[in-house]
Length: 316
Image (cartoon, rainbow, N blue to C red):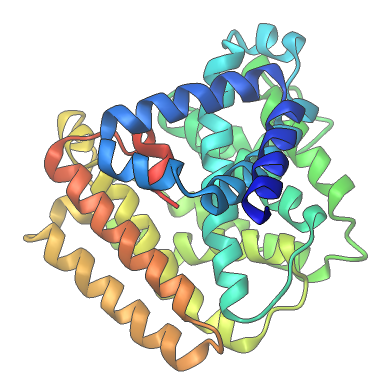
């Protein structure tokens, strides 16, 4: 009977998804089965995991539906299904990882906090895509935050997301988030050069992670703040590892490309995180288990030349 009730809740959430959400879920399921039939089968046969997955997907679906319209896609000259997959997948992963970090410190997060997390994820992805793929500079992108300044149409979505940020996170309730935002200039250090490779991991990555944490919870415990730098470094290193071959092809210099043994370097960073989390967090097990599993999966995907986002179901 409990299994039947859980199946009903999964179906109810599925039916409440937008048209794009339903299509995305079906495609993600199919791609995961093709990418790794064993892992996909184990995930898809576990109703509790499906429920956890689709519940987080519903939050991302809601934020996307509120922020992205047909008119916006037309203005940006982008296809809505492509945008959905690009933004919702990152929003979902952000909910997964930062939710587990909060859980490790026994900090609850309600749906409003989760929606704010997804909004910041969308902003982060849009900024990175404009910077990496469309060649906009830090100064050009930062100009979009000045609501009086003229900007090209391609920066419209970035500006819209930043405006919504103040609606969902009013400054008088999220003082620490806006105080942290004052250090945003550190992001101008982001460059794909050998000189900046480690600066990205040590300065930019922890800054960005704390944006996610402060938008969810205004008051963070000291222990959580202290574990942020090594976890942020681990996450950015994983991202660079996943993109290793692509970065090589386009001559993009990253820390992991400079590493003599990327796999060993990755596991060493995980082990450092594990020790710090065990020392600092009152409820560390699920976070550590997730980080170990994700590290192994990214390393395996990189060896097998598998697209990580094609194995979407298997990340959680």
